[in-house]
Length: 84
Image (tube, rainbow, N blue to C red):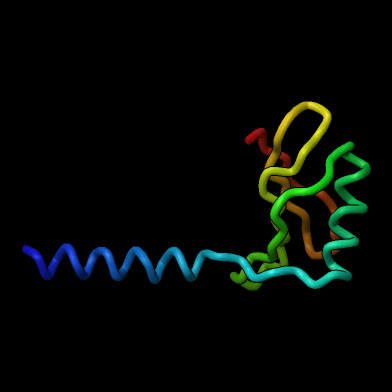
């Protein structure tokens, strides 16, 4: 039973690491912030998904209506805004 729990813990740690995004470059960050500005938003934690889609994510962006998680496509166009 103990081995099963250890195995599940290790699998969970590896799957979480696989889902983590990679940091964005300063040029990408500027383009992301410019796109967010058109939505009256700024800031947040920026990263690019590592699954090959080219999707950018901004967690906890500060917007006029509160905090939001925002996704942008590879061309820096907003494709999803979710209230946090």
